[in-house]
Image (cartoon, rainbow, N blue to C red; front, side, top):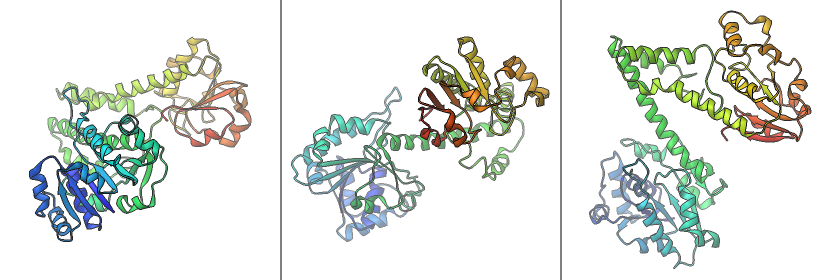
Length: 432
């Protein structure tokens, strides 16, 4: 396949070398004449293990070249990959001027062609960017079917970029509606690739980088606490990483309920307080509870937006199959609803007020006096003939739920239970 790559910085150079190794004819485009000359003599403009060899090999085989002529590059190729920079503005927003300029250049060139063209963005852009570019700068080409636009996020780490390209830890491409890719693009992208809508693929890139940053900040905050009190935090974090069931895993990494229970809120507050008393700045740890509170507020706003009728809450404890009500976010939801005058009913098969003891009993009596009067022993009684059903947990089977739900109900799915969509009711996902 004939491919033009716009922007010969880090991502562009690696993409060029690796695609040439796969046998594609690759033409790089850059306004910097010095970069172009580097490729013309078969050298790499950056230091990256293995890249110089791939560029030299591609040049020798006649598969790799570079130019400053953007129009010729777009006209002479089937696919254009945009890898130009998206630097930060002073206010932290992205500067998309380079992407917009290259987009206009490619679009003008494509309009002079008779054949179909594919434009792939690899430049990191915020959700909605690809759609805006397509609708405002490429609209005529997309509507005529002459142009296909994709967003293909890169996950290349400096120092291991070749390996990351050839054995990607994550391979995702975005299309306008998340539909599949043409077969001829698979040789560029690879077979094992997830196809998402443009916006989802754009957000995924930011989710990955933000999580990487969060891990670095978290480890460093634990390190500062340890150093201050004479603890070797490297040993602590080495053992932390041995836990691949909870710590280094997909556990907890799904949108849904705020955290609660007897451990997380208490321990996060205690550690933040400990660091503060020791004079250690740990803003990430210190703001975890605050962020969780904002998330709970967002849930309550969603609930109030969904009407003013009766409310059924499925799952009151902080976690399914437990009766622990300590700092359960759903207790706060119920407490918030009661003054509104809405009738609230709760169904949770794990709860029996007579069995609650100790701190669990004391806390629920303080936060939600008389909560036992809200509990329903029967599912149909809790759901009622109409109103809002807040499903905080899958504490009852979907087929048990189905006979009691009708089109006068709205189901709010708080924790991601896809089967709820099959019920004969209106469906609302909290975060999806």
